Image 1 (cartoon, rainbow, N blue to C red):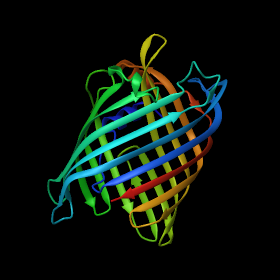
Image 2: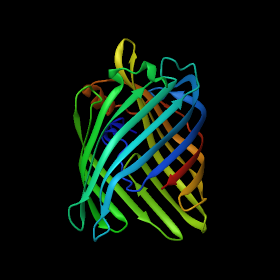
Image 3: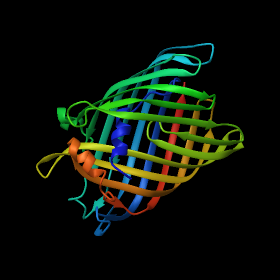
Length: 301
């Protein structure tokens, strides 16, 4: 996995693509496993990761057109905190990451097949959960603008530009989005809007779904390491079985049990040169596969 993936994702971090009001909370646990350096050699250390994250998405105004496409302003707030219990890895990584983001999004139809989606926001990316230590160097602005092609009723493709200020000045990247949905007794979903998630499953009961899910996510912190401004990044790929219980029309709970197939953790200089240099690495420093589990609660209103 190349570091550039996270740069592209952060260009549109916490895009409010949902047009309904929603609150969600999720906890994740990745079990302890051994760590390998950039040369894929064992270093003798190991560690696990515990994550808690949540968010709220609120449509401020919305109206639907004759094609059932919305014109809407939305506000989203999200936060995530990761705690790593590391053994003999102090030179390789941080023990905490705290990210919080606030974004305003706007979507409107341009025609029967096209819509415009734009988002702008700001976030804090720290290596501690205490806001008392927040400083200007931890702040990053994000934004994006994309044309969404409603190719089919269940398939949307997005193309545009994303930007962030991870290097202390605005950088523009290409942005590509995919959202494909197949509903019914059997269901498939492929989403590349905020991270990457692929799932497939079936409806076992009107209140119970069983899915096989795979996702790619990431977090980062702006830190000072070895006397230099650095970016500490964690990226992880997980897969597992996920029963999802619909408690009410608005409330659902899902539990995932499976495998963390890959979890990278590394420092990079906070420069554009370092980003391109990281693309030439054969592999990033990473943990071996480990047990993974999560619990998520979603409430729509």
